[in-house]
Length: 535
Picture 1 (tube, one colour):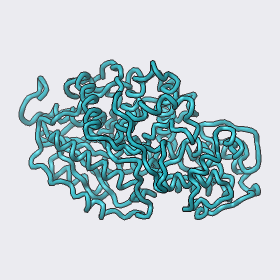
Picture 2 (cartoon, helix red, strand yellow; picture 1 turned 90 degrees about the vertical axis):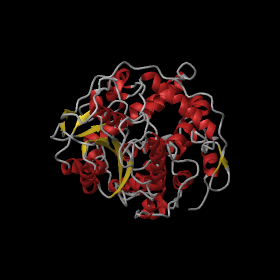
Picture 3 (cartoon, one colour; picture 1 turned 45 degrees about the vertical axis):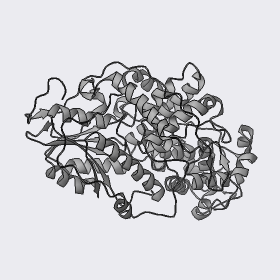
Picture 4 (cartoon, one colour; picture 1 turned 30 degrees about the horizontal axis):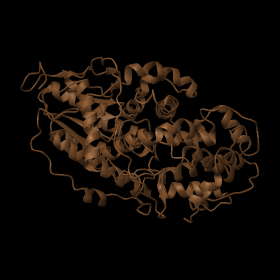
């Protein structure tokens, strides 16, 4: 129990935060040896996809290093000055009811224990109230175009969360159904006095939070942005035009928000009785999803695997990132997007670790921070302030006009969704990129732009092009259904966060990319040879 806390049931408490202290310098994970190369599904060795097959001692070493960093920051969140700007109260009720028996963290977008401001804030409240802390996750049988590839990655990561929480005397509850339907009974059964949840700017998760808040009229509901380094509502109060307008705002706020985390600790007020272990097989059976899109071997689910991939990036690929990140044939990318998308590792933790290499690889670190912080948080800004983030209606007026003017332009090639999905076009580079997406659940960032722009060129209308691009990305990519994915498609097809270019058929003033341009950037034939497969 933190100093100054009193035993027994506290009186009604208002949900308040305190100011956070100054940022601490980062420390790299450093020293684990390189992992083995992965064999891809066609049996060939691939440097760009390295499965994290490390000995338990290596993973233990990483976790111990990070645990030491957190403990140097504070003994627990109770001794840490939490930045109140990370939190917003969504409910009309602001006070925790007297005599409550717990706080619940409704985990959603950010599926990890440590380096999680939502979890930390929930533990802080529970410690202040001297009550148990519970964590729940609401599992629905389907979600947009997600397949078993995505659900399996998520469920295996949550199983790791359950085990880690067990060691901290924090129960984990897997609730089957929509939050608005299952949370009210959970709150009532456990006499919960307040709920903390994650932030997502997307339409469906935002609806879940709104409906859940309305279904819990008697307790305060707080939302914490633990996915972004600078909370979305703090980075900007409006829709930003592009990276050049949001960059100075985020850069100004990074010293305040890019700080080290305190630890989530063994909770001093144990929940009784503890729930039975989750039946993960039953959870899998509850799903109503496409099971034809299988899991991939290169991306092992869970926080530990994600942190190993982060360390491997820093040791082996970061030095090449600045010069080679736009070359699909080079092994220069972080490969962290699946773990960041599911919140299994923190983007803030990744930035802290990478920043520790500034003196060695300044250009690469600068480039990584630009992409993983400025560009990624720009995507959240776009989806948060633009309800049409996945529609032609969501782009700028100049882009709407130019797409409309050229909507009826003659297309040299026209392909159906089915032919595109099976990579059956005349363009061997586009086919190879689609094969990579289907087989590996990822696509190189440079090729994603080319891939999406060609869909615009080869389909009857911009509306159909956008729908197909989002469908394919969401169905096959492990980081699908993400603000980054929607913004990537909208940039490529609808010109958001861009400017008008020289006018041409079909594209109008939307930026154009072609095959010969790619040949000037990298060895196209090499990439095509690697992914010359039939789907």
